[in-house]
Image 1 (tube, one colour):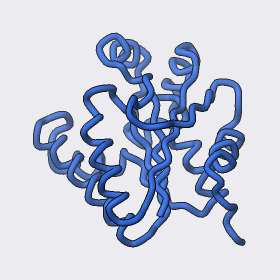
Image 2 (cartoon, rainbow, N blue to C red; image 1 turned 180 degrees about the vertical axis):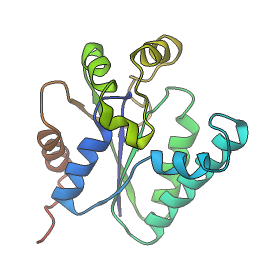
Image 3 (cartoon, rainbow, N blue to C red; image 1 turned 45 degrees about the horizontal axis):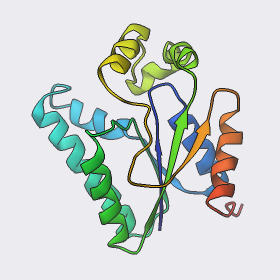
Length: 180
């Protein structure tokens, strides 16, 4: 089982690249906002209970795909320091079932992120859509760093299509193309 762990700041193209990678490889996509929306249907965003449940369901879902040998692409806005324990736990869960995690860091220039974050298409997934909120997020938290304890493929999405980024990931990790 392969877990492709795509991370980067809001607006960098994680879901768009993940969807293209899924088309190429046949892997399933577990978009992190699925967990957020599920829990948000019952608990207020940002409360301790909300985050505890989001974390719990993400971990359990990723462990189950590892148990069932389902190649999966997972997306996350990684926060240096705040998400390290979560990331280590995901690696342990996947590897304990014979799987492996392949890390991909997406990045681009801040001006590009600010332009992308305002797109209307982001609203249907309850993604961050405010340029001022994104600017505030970057001042308060580190959302652009590499995960320090894993090897990551870094891909600049600023000047390439999502399909080209996905192909780069597939080549780097030697994922075969899905059979039609």
